[in-house]
Length: 187
Image (cartoon, rainbow, N blue to C red; front, side, top):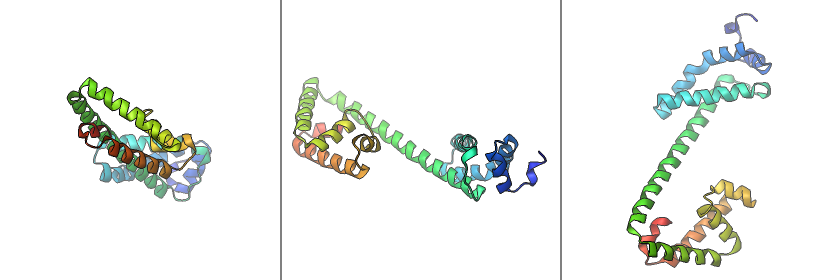
């Protein structure tokens, strides 16, 4: 194969789809800097940007025989934006998780074993009193730690239904716990 730097993106894509490592390398060298800059504007983290680019290029190589792309640069930049959004979302989820862990640890230090057993009994009875679908959603969320999406898939319902059922269950539980404000930290 001749010098690939003279090829258009469309030609490179054609060669990539046939498994050309040279075409892949040329695509990387041609577009990595714009992709990196696009990611860095959002993330402001060099290591995260490099990881993100690696993910995009690994995906590109793994799907090389099935690509249906009309404008390569736009496609790659959109992939970077998508990955950056997922990175931010995941970071927020992790931060929220660790904040919840900290709150729970503080609560565990202030709640006696007797109060904890009482709370478990109240929640156990409360769960049994919920309507069937609401009980399933609440149990999968709070005891099996499944995400709303995982619950929706498992039960064959929409994520919105899962959200609504959790909202109903938590509202009822807050009412049930009422003045036991020390326990509200677990909700």
